[in-house]
Image (cartoon, rainbow, N blue to C red; front, side):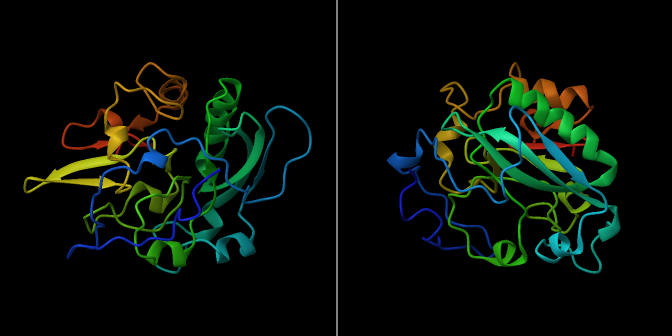
Length: 237
């Protein structure tokens, strides 16, 4: 079970809005939590998915989409799909993605289900979550988020629904800025040791990299200027 303080302890932030990087708490060094599913369980057994395109207005309304985002609401698809949790039980999650990529994304998660790759939680990011103070311990697998690239004004591929972040705590983002290491989530530093392989970690030889490579998506874990181990995108950025 996750500790009761998960997601409740905001971190101090710097002028750019990034949270203070702190050592990974002992309870999070071998993270394998089970969190409530965000949507009702899909019927049946094994891998199951449902795509609604365009996404229902009620789904768009609880997402980060708003007028001015670089993709029209009508171009987004709502996917509900089965995944394996860290408890080795079948769960159901949801993604909001670019409709043009929906079938490819389902193909990826079909392969991850067959490989029994564990996922903690799969939900759609809301506007209040996007604007909330960082707690440094989030672990939501997600796709569409209307936001710029971290630390930039350039729009992220997430803003087009053409990127997926998978188990971000086990697969953090890290970049050195003026001699200071920036890590997201801010409490996930222990997972930057990619030689200490733990459940949920993405590796170049593992099923996650292979599944995204088959649909032609690139991995942020292979970038040179920074490492974004959670991130896959259609254009490799």
